[in-house]
Length: 249
Image (cartoon, rainbow, N blue to C red):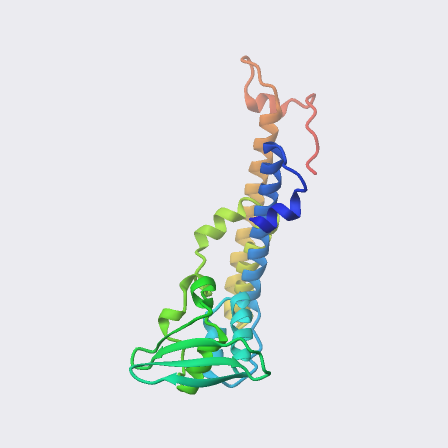
């Protein structure tokens, strides 16, 4: 919110100006989220290692979140560690190999596969830091423990209901949402002639229904624009050729 205020206002705005700008910003952010969702669905991230952890993260995280995770994962390769306490819960000091003096403490319970770091990145950002990933690697963990995979960062986190509600606010959101569904249908239809014929028929039927709906919406708008008196019906006014109805743009 602080960034939003600095970017849009140099002085205290009126309430009307603030609301208008805030609504524009919400729509812009929703559009960015829609684009990010398309990237997650239709593009595959490039893996930089053969690690099963990186592969798992690429499969479960959204594209944007995976990029952030991958950055932490690659940094973990450049960390050095020293054990400072052994026992049921062991502790390690973790720092960069390049001489960075900043050191973080990672506590790790091997029996429960639980870890926490003094940097508190997971607590604040919901993504594991490179310090903890370093310890996971040395203990040869093949997958991320479930408790470190927050549902809100996964590919399946956003429900279709939320998308549909937001799509009512923006032309771009509506376009991207429909385009995503159409692309999925095209991918399926291209696999065989039989499926192609079914998809083609369904598409033609859907297009006819869309055209009919568009016509009804246009007709309803025309009716609303006509000043109807008590002695005439809506249809009478629509059929009156003397009335001027602005062309649809």
